[in-house]
Length: 79
Image 1 (tube, rainbow, N blue to C red):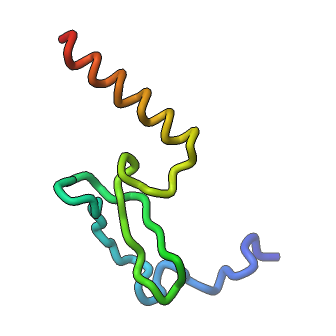
Image 2: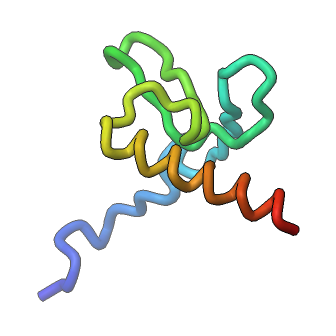
Image 3: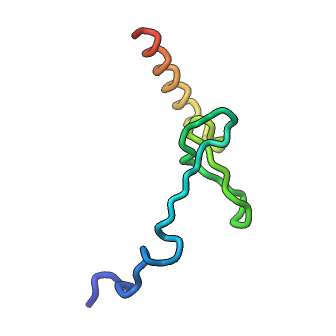
């Protein structure tokens, strides 16, 4: 018996499987990598943001980000 149920199928050879897309943050002036995308539906192209500018963060995620940014600024001023 085969270990994988679809061993005959080669997913990495399917069209578009090996394409790389470069997404940068959509926030004006930001040059960071846009690793967080969102689209309201499959028919609407996704928009991409860095974590700092990603608009769908929860309150807790936003507070954690603010603490990290504050700590990084404190470190920079003490050095």
